[in-house]
Length: 437
Image (cartoon, rainbow, N blue to C red; front, side, top):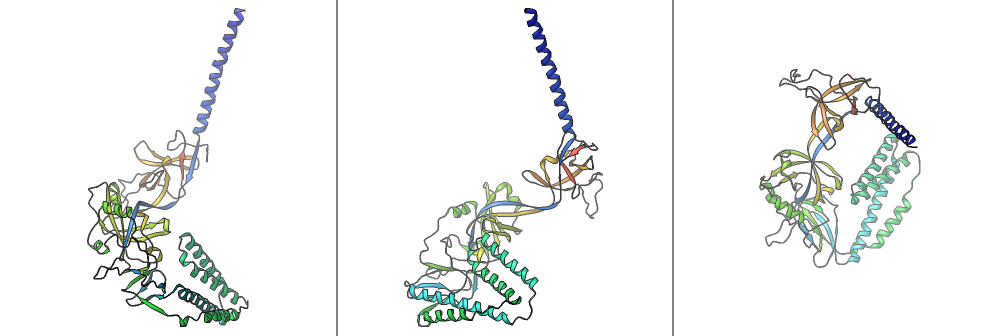
């Protein structure tokens, strides 16, 4: 019985040893079969922006006062009257131009609003009716115009420019009506015109007493007031810089009470973005340089701005003042914003970090699969991102614009649509690969 037990132990040991040998062969087979397989990706020429993300506060020329210290920029309701703007947001106005009308009661103001809406519809229908005289319209071109108008409407929705939607809808309707007329459809607006004109006449607006409100100075009219208009002296920014502490105080500030305000006048199209960036990134912005700034949350991209000032680098954050000389409805509504400053644009090949290798001569590059053969190609890294680099072929030029043959490696050069190896084992220049994905 004991002999049988010893035989069983021997059998078990032999089975274990045999199993270990088999497992070793399997692991070795998997390793070497995997070493002959690689993962690749095709590269193409592309462009990437290096951006610095900031929080900023917008300062405009909207805090003018009279000799008594009363605001000229912010327009307040007087004597309990009801005000209706007569110009749209960001409309340029001269000194003394009519910017609003006021009424003694809400009832009178409502009649005026309805009359103006009806007049707008009447003018619009008359414009459409005049198209009956069209003798020829390029329908193919008109289809493109309709498509462009619809895309513009969708863009306005996406960028939250809701105040411009009515005009976008009118433009779409105008184009569609033009197509109906051009393709032979009969359109008769006479009954609708008569109805609108009758409704307008019934409102008897001519008997309503209203007063014109005139602009106190030349600038841009905006119907919204947010309470931050007087937080910073606009005129000081032309000659003075700001500190990171001042910017932080502006970003943390609360709006003032502007109850009773129905609009404001922005004195000029120039405005400033006050922000701060970490000291270790301040080298990317220099006074006088032009930069491209985007406000992604507001759908505003690639706005040209100039670096007006950069504060001392005493703190961990450095204050930067950016100047812009454009004004429109979207820009007039900016205040506390998340912005992206484009400090550089790189054109080259986007290459995964996993593909970067160093050859025996210490050159940084990538392995490229040419047919079934592995080829090492050196690269020049232009910009490091989180999980990839922007790179170019390792070609260097002298002052005459000719290739510097001493600095440029005498090796194959990276090119568009190269099949770069991002994963593989035991790779080396000249190796033959069985399969790739």
